[in-house]
Each structure stands twice: as structure tokens, then as C-alpha cells.
Image 1 (spheres, one colour):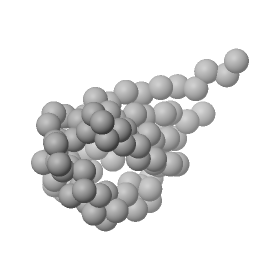
Image 2 (cartoon, helix red, strand yellow):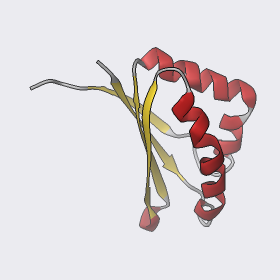
Image 3 (cartoon, rainbow, N blue to C red):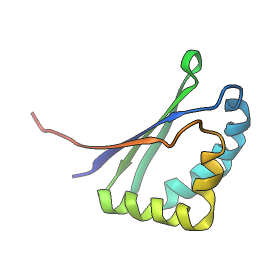
Length: 96
């Protein structure tokens, strides 16, 4: 069973076009990281809000990725495009 991770990000006004090349450069690393199954990027222009919708094998795999990007500077680079830290939520699939 996998875990769904959402990162709700408030992008600074006028920064999304600058954020795109950063995402294009870094998403392959996320997708290749151990435990990652999928990453989708959604953007609401009217609110400068980006949603990273991810699927991971486990929550620990995602947390290991956060540690990795925290240590290599990628997280700090991402934060420069955002007006506040991302809101991260973890969801388990409920089989009904």
C-alpha cells in the first residue's frame, strides 16, 4: 500500500515563471528517488498556489527525500520561490 503526499505551496507573486525551470531541473531527481511512484504539479494562477501531488511507497521514503533535499540545498532553493513553507499532508488510501 502506498501513501499519498500533498505539498501545498504559496508561490510569491510573479515567481511561477521563474519556478518552472527549477522544477524541470529537479523533478527527475524526485521521480528517481527510492520509494517515489509519481509526482504531479498543479497550479492555481488566481491564487499563486501550487500543489505537488505525490505518491510514495512509504511516509519514511518521503521523509528520507526531505532530509536529502534539506542537506543538499534544494529545499532552500525551493523556499526562495515561496512566501511560506509548504503545508505537507500524508494520506493513506482507504479501500471501500
